[in-house]
Length: 210
Image (cartoon, rainbow, N blue to C red; front, side):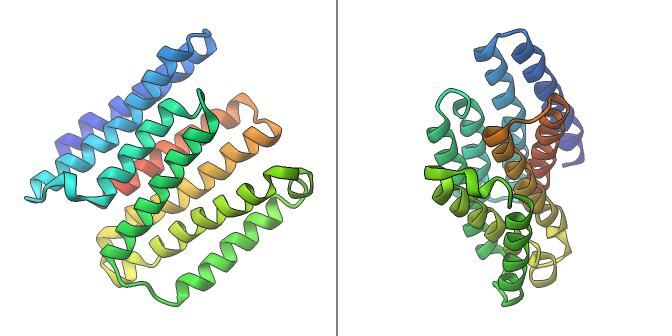
């Protein structure tokens, strides 16, 4: 497993760098291929981990959630609604996987309220300007924070091996909120780099939970 991590994580990093290189050169199709390649490495890592444990990877909700992220990475910049739908499906799959991995506890509700409240506070100046985008914007963070709040208790209910996935789910939520900010009001180039780095770390954390 260590060998797979040492191979696939650098490949993911290379894919992310090449995504930005070709994006800045105006070669959108090629850049999106590299972005999907990067996230695809975590799909492979998940499959390798499950196979080494003697488990069929195609039966894993985590595997399909990561695969949905890979698809969304290719589609999002071509058709935003379809890309967000794929990401939404990924988050639902991740939530179902988390519920399979460990029994939900009441503290997750308090965590969800805290995380959603922090999100509302941070975006308090943007929310009144959303217009017809208000409902999707309110619903999507609700799903994100549900995933994060359920995952954060996994190390305590299902074992310490889930710490990477717990952190990955939280980082994923932060990354997606930064993406939303970029769509609504724009992000600097450095913020875009930071956001995608967070996304890669999030996928790695989740994949390590396989």
